[in-house]
Image (tube, rainbow, N blue to C red; front, top):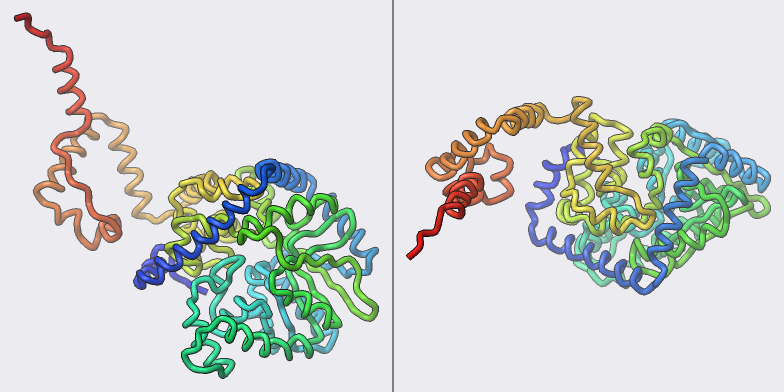
Length: 464
C-alpha cells in the first residue's frame, strides 16, 4: 500500500505523461458508456431517486433490518458472524479455515477484504490465497493493490500484463494479445477452482426479507469458486442490506450501467441456502460504519453500491491514478469514507478534488459526494489535521480579507512582486508554481478600475 500523501504519489504517477493521458482517456471512455446507457432509459432519474430513498430507509432502520436478515439467513442454514472491525473479520475467516483443516483459499473480488487487508493477514498465517478475478489476479501477481473498485488493473497496459504473465505464468515474452493472455489466465485458474475447498466472495446486496444475498460478476469466477467448494464464505459491510427482493430490480438496473455501461452484470448470482453437504458462512462487518452512520453530514456515504461511476468521471482520479489515494477505496467515494476510519492518516484525501460536483451528478444513489468532501475539509481543519503551513496561511488570509486596507495593500504588493520580482513567486518552493504557470500581473486592481470608470461615467458631458 502506498504510504505517500496523495500529492506526492500523484507527482510520481504524472511523471509518465503518456500513461496519464491514456489512463484519463480510458476512464472517460467508460464514463461515456455510462452516459449512453443512462440516456437509453427514460426513467433513469426515477430509478436514481427510488434507489436513494430505499437507501435512506435502510440507513434509518439499519438495526431492525440487520436483525431481520440474520434471523432469515439463519433459518436458511447460513451461519452468520458479526465482526466489529477488520481484525475480527480476518480472525473469523481464519478460524473457519482452521475448523475445516484448510490452508488454501480461492477468492473473488471483495473490496471489503481489501479494506480489511485479508490477503496480507492470511499470508502471514500460512494460508495461500488466490484471487480469481482477472484484474485482481494480475495486481496480486505484481504485489500491488487494486487501483479501481470495478477495474482493479485499469492502471496497467497490455504490455504490463504480458510482462507479468511471462514472469509468473511462463507465457511468451512480449505477448500482448488479449485473447492469448486471457486464455493463459483461464488455464492458470482452472486448477485453482477444481482443487480449493473453500471459496470467498463479497456481497453486492443482502435481502432482509429473505435472508439471501446477491453477488454480481462479469467473469463467473465467483460462481466457479463457490459451486465447486465445500465451504462458501461471504463478507459484507452492513450497509449492503436492502429490505425486500423487489428492490433488487432498482439496484441491478443501476449498478452495471453506472459501472461499465452494461445493461446488467453478466452474472447476478443469488444465494439463499447451501447445497447438501456445503457450508455457507456470512461475515457482517462494521469497521467504522456505525461511526459514519452516526455522523449526520456523512451518513449518506453508506448508500454507496460500489459502482465506481464517481471514479470514472473524477478529473483528479483520472489523472492521479488509484494508488495515489493510499486506501482500499480510491477516488471521490474513498475520500469521504477513509477519513472516517483514520482522520490523521487520510486527512489529505478530501483535498484531492476540484469540488466540480461531477461525482454527485453520476452517483446512482444520489450521494452528495462533493458536498461531503467540502464538509470533511472543514472538519479536518477544525480538528487540527490540516498541514500547519496551510493553517497559518488561512489565518493570515482571513486577517487580510477582514481588513479592506490590508486587502488593498496586499494586492498592490502582490502585483508589484509579480511584475518586478517574479522569481519570488516563480520558484520550486511555491507549490502553485510547481503545477501551473503564474498569471500575468494586472496593471491595476478591479477596485481601482471600477472607481476610475465610475468617476468617468459620472463626469458631466460638456455641451457643444
